[in-house]
Figure 1 (cartoon, rainbow, N blue to C red):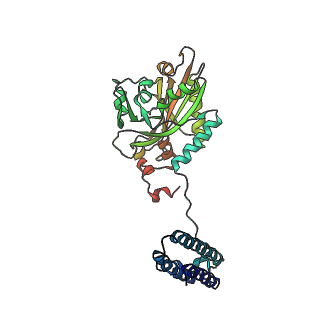
Figure 2 (tube, rainbow, N blue to C red):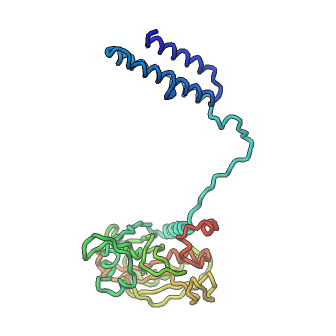
Figure 3 (cartoon, rainbow, N blue to C red):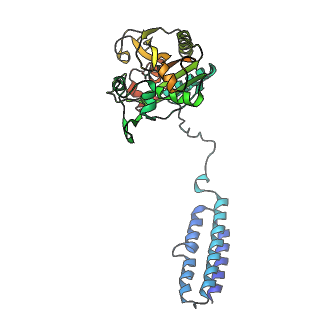
Length: 340
Ligand code: PHE
């Protein structure tokens, strides 16, 4: 019998055998018999070597054709008999519920704040976490020699220019001048985001935390606008009256500047570790935008004024859910996360 005939015979035999197949196990056995590494087709292929050189390419082509045809036939049968597991499944049995995740408390509060500020006509902006010294400090009226740089020490990245290095931003205020450059005035924007500090960690400090910046620039903006906005937003987020106090606070990029503290909700003002036993939580730094900052943003401070605030989003989340250690937020501990 010529190789050609043998190939034909094998093809016919395989296709007839296939018709008898009813389950995956025997299909697999048949597949090994014909198409396996030591199967019948393989032994015909081995014989190709003995064929005259001129005939070899043509025969080789034929072998491949048969192989492909059989493979398709096997696949078709495999599909019609279904997979091994679906045979004998009882569809009335109760299923296994796939675990579904949920938003991290930080993201939940962040999104709520975004909605709240959007409803007051603010845009929501996003900014880079890897920032330049210029936007993080210089353009906020904090020159290189200024002691305020030590108060917000951070992680510097290798490279960059000696007078404008790359760093992990220490506050979302780094977006103030970026936003002014891009959108000009009038402007109402909030910027939620992750910030970093080179810091010894404890229950109320972490090296990585979240803030939400707010910036409003227009004509005739005053402290009354600032206080009004803070009140609306705090009662909106806590859905109740919260006690706050305003103290003078120093930030080189506002003048005058304030710290807005909130009565600690974890201990109700009695003193606990999340408020460092003081009964109050430093929640918001704010003030009227410093004229220098407006200038850096390309605006004339004689024409425009504005207010800015930086809200400790992580702290707010802690107050909201009565979390007494900031480090839990980034711990990734499911025992913590699954409580929300
Ligand atoms: N960026 C300041 C901080 O991180 C907070 C702040 C923002 C203060 C805007 C005033 C105005 O501490």
